[in-house]
Length: 208
Image 1 (cartoon, rainbow, N blue to C red):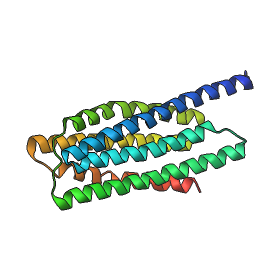
Image 2 (cartoon, one colour; image 1 turned 135 degrees about the horizontal axis):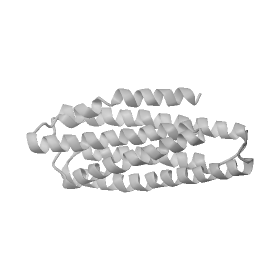
Image 3 (cartoon, helix red, strand yellow; image 1 turned 60 degrees about the vertical axis):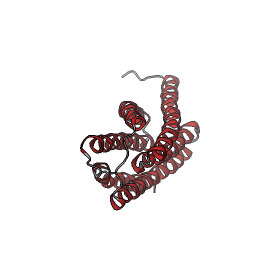
Image 4 (cartoon, rainbow, N blue to C red; image 1 turned 90 degrees about the horizontal axis):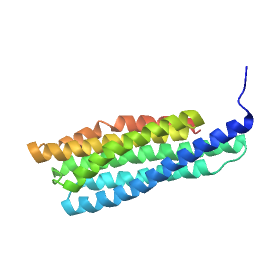
């Protein structure tokens, strides 16, 4: 049976790492811009949901930045394993932060009975994220499988969660704008908390 030369395998892995780093840097840049726009537009519109969405983007920057650090530092197999576990542990923590954010944002909205204001910027931003995030997550999952990186796979799930949050933001703003269902956004967000906690727990346990 013919085997691929070791140097060729190394070159192939190097190319995969470059692609993974590109995706992570893209997510860092995109989420920084998304967070700034969402928080600014949310404050202007008095929308708790939109401000909370911006805070989520900040958490996404933390997770993506951690993966940039992980993928940029190479070493011995033992060092690689240690770095992978450290990255996975931090990604797991961001899942819990994300769940805490959703609980706080949704609970505050329900308790205060404050419907999110109609925000054209928020609607456009959530629509854009609904397109960009699934594409980024799909590529992350492919690269994670080929590189054998559980931390990158966990971050791909977190990117998908950002997609779900974008959908609930869009749904909540739209239902409130057209039908006055102010509670739709926090109710949908609360339904995602168990998934966030589950993924955070699994990532944290695997990093032990």
